[in-house]
Length: 120
Length: 130
Image 1 (cartoon, helix red, strand yellow):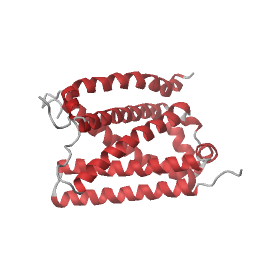
Image 2 (cartoon, helix red, strand yellow):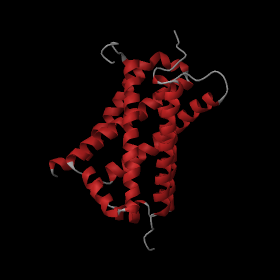
Image 3 (tube, one colour):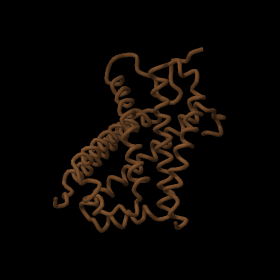
Image 4 (tube, chains in turn blue, purple):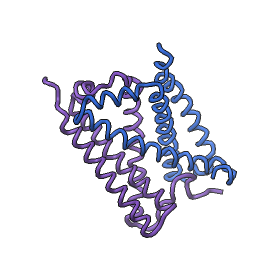
């Protein structure tokens, strides 16, 4: 889809928003079930959290954080353009601003989450 | 040239009615989630590490006060509204007629189930003895 249409910023922003939204949906389903276990079966909950804390779990956690941060920033960008239409002129610049904020906030967070994999 | 539409959201319905209400709900819940979801992630994935989050941690630390239980229940409610209405937009893009109704019925039920499970655990998980 992205290659065929020679996607540019506006379409990529839309596609990433949709993909990240669906990804967060999947995690929310898991997350409600696991937190339900904390009451229903505390032992099972502790086991699930150990999986989350494993190296693969931490990688998934980082991806989840990335999806969440992108969706949050781009959602704000959509709201800004919806309520102040003049900003649609600068939709590309806003998107690049999103990526700047995404990098500045995301890199330190990813570092904190992934650090235990390399045994500190 | 000013384009009066957004580059990745959907255009605000011009006529008043439920579609327009849904459009506003999507944006208001989105704004609320910007705060609720990012603060949640910051606290439980950065300030605390998942390896320390046992069931006892939830009962004794995370949900030791009514404030955090209320905060998380609000978060649950707003997430489900935003997520179900978000899927409604996606379903509207790819499906129509009966298949759309069928898919959305499933997602309304799923949303209701998640809301029920989340509400039960946040309301009934025993508090530690004071």
